[in-house]
Image (cartoon, rainbow, N blue to C red):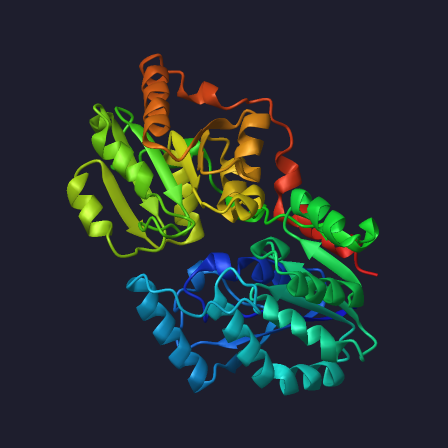
Length: 417
């Protein structure tokens, strides 16, 4: 039996977004079921998610509190973000969210003693460090003196956030000292290997796949019309997962909503958005009354029901950064694949998820411009009139098994030395 320690900043129940912790949560649960002994060390935020998104924790968890200074920084950052004031532009951190980088660095200092204690007392032979924040990768500096293997895990790209040379050198040094590098997609794996000249056998991809067990009891027939919002007279479009109503954020759906509002035949559509409610949703509910509804956070089984009742599943990532957009492939996208429903992908730059939609004929894609979005509305209406919406997706797609979470995590075990 292997003894595994996972070091990650966010973990249930101290996370208000499943996306920030699901990769390591599901890996820990999977390893626990496979008779690994798993301990997770994470940050204990003041926020406590009482529902845990409907999931239970079976692994051992050690949550170490944030410092008061860190809590203060978070408050300042959240305030300035609402005012669109840019602070914490510390280039030396090279993070997608610079406060997140600072938070990780401060928290790691407070967690260092506990990490060392757990490694010795629990005979840890494998340590997984997951970022962002990528400042957690600094743990490699004191972990390398132990005999166990070290694996760093990328939930997001690191090297593309900045072109500053000394940051590249720092990242390269860390990668040279670890045993394995786990990343979130094959595309990013290939680019990371090229960027740093890594041995191909050292770097492997584990996608954030769908949970097959969660889908077993759900069929389209069983849950059709369970919610009156989903009516066959309309084209039912559903977006699940975290989203933003601010055009300043990477996951903004503001352009989609603007296009919908100005679309002549918008009353032919029913739009359901399930995710974290943010400022501005009441404005759009009033503006698009009887057309759009915001469901807030829902459990995974409810999200599955919504997907199965829908005609089209929406996936939007209009981030204006060409490099990070290149690799984007959201966790909910895997559930969309499992649902067998047509997928509508909206992007600023071609992304891995939009490429997959086009390559495998899983649905329809367009760039994040009002004119192009309206063209897609037209296509959907035309297909609806002919009762051919389902033809948007190729029923012969046979790679679904590859995106099963267990299949992906089996690859993780194969890569353990």
